[in-house]
Amino acid sequence: MTTQDTAQRPTLRSQRLNQVTNEPHSKLDALVKAHAPFETQANFARFVVAQYLFQSELVALYNDAELTAVVPDLPARCRAEAAKADLADLDTEVPAPVAGALQNPTKAQAMGWLFVSEGSKLGAAFLLKRAVGLGLSETLGARHLGEPAGGRAQGWKNFVKTLDELELSAQEEVELDKGAIDAFNRFTVLLEQAYAPELA
Image 1 (spheres, rainbow, N blue to C red):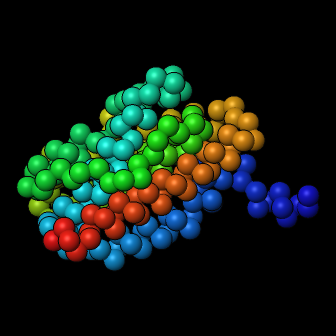
Image 2 (cartoon, one colour):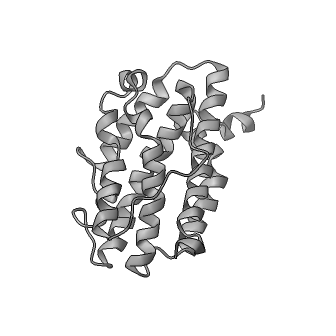
Image 3 (cartoon, rainbow, N blue to C red):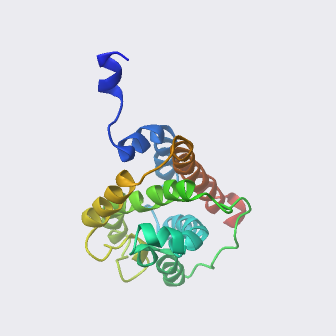
């Protein structure tokens, strides 16, 4: 291995995950912008539909005993109920589940999905500011974007520290990467579903 290879290889697992998910993350960001969720409350409501669908698929992970043993405050981090309350505020029906939800992931895969879900809370600070322009807030219509207990940055730091310190086999590292990539791809599918013309 050359010195250049060493320089390009991330030292931390979380940094590697950021690299391997760069493409699906960029694709998702572009798709969100294309749907202009902050132009109208109706557009934003569809964005919340996608958020609810994604978070509701992860409820089992956030309440999994094995995962909670790794991340003790995991159940409190779940945002499915907040997104559901936002839908009520926005006078939007709770959507039916979409086929293709995550089923029985390995522990490493699950951590990849949680990495994406938890990481999205950092960007949520920016989204919340945009939602305020629509007359929404952490207590009305945009609860799921609200500041988590203990703060966004600290919550993320704690999660990443735990993730980086986990002892994983080579196979589990592969599963972790796949979980994170699958999570971005799944949210992309759910976002397309939420903005599908037949829902108009």
